[in-house]
Image (cartoon, rainbow, N blue to C red; front, side):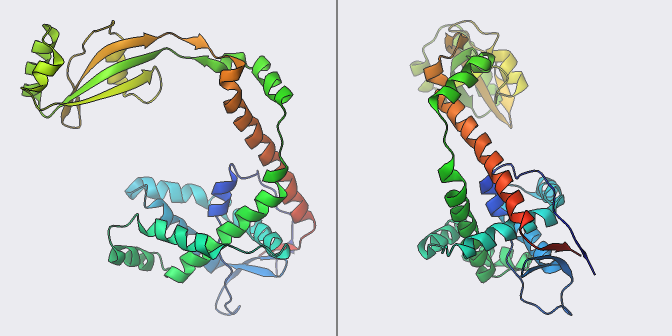
Length: 309
């Protein structure tokens, strides 16, 4: 037999991710399923743990593939049972408060999920691969909504951030709100190296872009970039060496060649309180919500019967 314990773990990083970690109850006999934990009157089985992994693999496969997908799945297995216990407590609290899910939103989310697949047959094939049927997905979406609603009612709606808190945070952390130098760039893409070299030569000698565009099959875009953000290292090094109206050498990116022209430089500057206040408010709100959520979960655990097998 198991022993009665209290679960200790850090609060989930974000409640929306917590909502995605819900796993439905299994109503199978004890002889068929190994019991992993008992949470009040609910049972978490080994099948629940397996279904959680399969459900998350289905969700994450829309964004990740191969080894990267499996690495994501492995990282979620850490503290998996604790996560499911917390989810079950939140779901129980939703039911105790007579909260119901909006079925139109359940259907809308299901429809949105299906859009990530090229065809209905591919969707059904992926479900079967994970050992799931559409009713499983629909039930999990319904439970996600129940969990979101109860956290919104008990926690999110009660969080308040005052203007004085925003001002105090800004005054303590002004270095966080220095806007880095930003560069505005023309980005010219060409299909092969020969075209890129020829275009680059004439562009550097002063021929107008409009005239060159009539002779070369280019794609033109504009980009704003700051150092240390999303640019590849070789591109960042090239564009941050340019002076105004300077033109970079062609850079090969996955078989295409890109030429950058610097149009403008916005110097680094200290953001004012009014410029930073939305970001500060969002950060303080999220921090306070997670603290309140952590306390609420500990209260639920303290008054609950939890046994881990």
